[in-house]
Amino acid sequence: MPTLDQDRAKLAFEHITTVKTWDEARRKKYASIVHAMPALLRSAGLSQSLHFVKSRKSEDQRALLTHLAAQLRRSDDGIVNADVLLDKVRRAELPAYLQLTHEALACITWYRRFVQGELRIEAGNDDARD
Image (cartoon, rainbow, N blue to C red):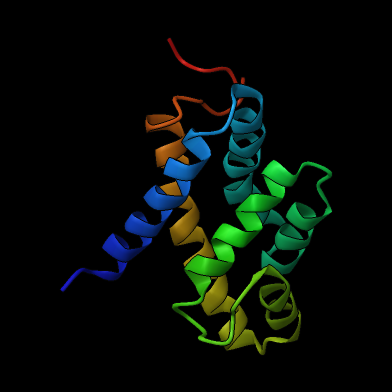
């Protein structure tokens, strides 16, 4: 039986494998929001961070919201898509909000690792590594 962290990693890897098929410009846009998320989550909180992602003009960046909704479905079966996730986060009581925040941080760690390892895009410069 896989651990919770293995489940997070597996789904993140599946999402990044899809992103890997995108052209370079799209991958860089996705990577930029992934690299920004840990700091956003810690400084602005879950709700503001997720709504920031939703506000992006780039559909490639907004894909992260769909990916996180799929991840956070483990915490709440009612999270069936990004819009439901946003609604649940806005309405959540403090314990549920904190649990979703903790899970989002744990998940985004895997996305960052895979963006660096699989897409070979580092934080800060959004350039592909050689």
